[in-house]
Picture 1 (spheres, rainbow, N blue to C red):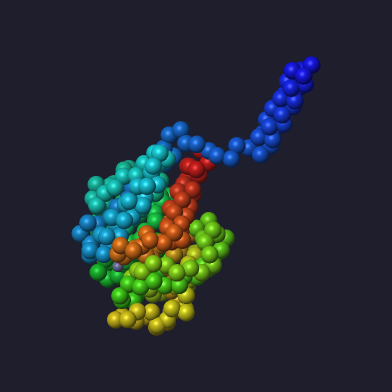
Picture 2: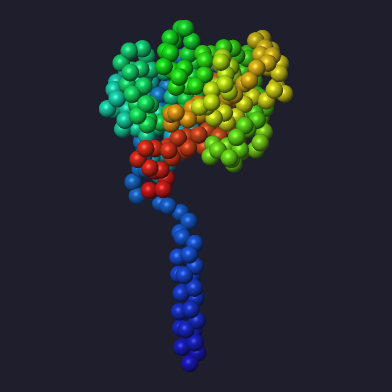
Length: 269
Ligand code: ZN
């Protein structure tokens, strides 16, 4: 009799657990194969602080490949990447470099105009008369490089948008590690297609010691909604990955761009 009662109780418990699991759904989604492919491109010929950042970034993103949740290829130039090769990647992680004039830029433009993904750090957004790429201003959603602080220093950042997947788990304000920060003119704030996500707080002015920025809109993370992209202004030196909040921001931006893949959100597969 006792054995029968035990079996009945066990049966009821099993049904209850099964029913509960059915209602709530299993909370995790394990990858059977890599979910997507990314290509990280950096320049090993850039100024030393930009190469330092690139090396730290390669380690940061490499750690995100643990378990082979995604595949990351790394290269030091866009030279071999025609459109057909680029379109195999869900995201380009571009660090302190950009495609060289000619066929590299044509392939990149076609890739981005057809749903390609990009996160660019720091000098990946540097474009002026020396780089001479008008399309890139349209893509970045602002004018050319305008000015910068020097030396690199930490700044107080303000979240402009607290509901974006890039920022919603970040504090409303936080101090970012030391960096050289680029201001652009016209500012991306003037472009209605741009969603500004974070800016350098006006409380930082005057910003710099040798080269001092005194005023102006100073957005540092934004998205041009006409493309699948997020620009991140930081990327100078070997202190950039020392802060958990900024690391989370970097991860968020990466994950957000990937999640918008034209083939569907790879994290839901
Ligand atoms: Zn720099």
